[in-house]
Image (cartoon, rainbow, N blue to C red; front, side, top):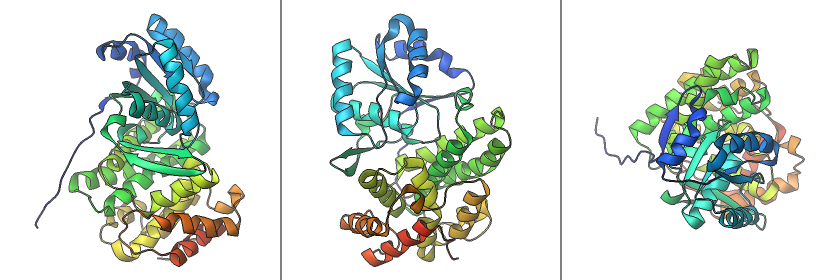
Length: 353
């Protein structure tokens, strides 16, 4: 076997384990910082306020306006607030929306970031930032947006509702699955992808049985870290392009969109990348598209784009946007093939092998 690849690990320092979030003050000081602005969504504002209170003099205050798809207007406001309060770092508490805000601020100001994930988004270990302005979502890669420190505390995921745990976990699985056939894939990332998918495949059913199962929560968070790390190392393809299109142009829920699209996009590419997707088949027990669909339905994940209120006319527009500037993909795409794929996801039809 001949191997030839390039590998670049994440620059983020990973702190993993129960109770690790209690040491957040120490990590702020290790960064040489003295005044942290705590970021969150409005939904997690009370948690952010509590964290700021625990930080005491190390807290500059709270900005609780993070939103899905990282609107540029929200980032501009957060940058102004940070400057006004004299913040010299940010602590992003929450999921992908809050992490995205911190990364967008770092892109503009180079402000150091500490991220405390409470979902399985995985974006906290990637150099990827997606931003939305004027109804369009654009994505970039820049080492400036990689957080300095990521604190994974499984205890903080115990309050994540089961339905959100499922869709967030499938979002993470999507990162790993696409990494297997990425143009710049490498064997280390592929090993991480398989391990991350396996961990989430085991953890999600256990979380459904008992949302307070800390061992399952720990395994899911471990899987999410691995899957996010894969996403940070390789280029994105069709799945992420379609999810970014639907989220940025139609404001669909981020994790739910990933959960719905995953069996269809992976099934589409399995027609030409079956060998590369073998880990998906091995983990989920069958041809990639149908096996992922069956797993998603077994854990109660949403399966139809129609549930977002999208119309078939919206699908026409989404297909046009997604094929206007497509990401690299193992299977050639055109507007017709993507429109058919979107129709399948809209109807919630089980993909064919």
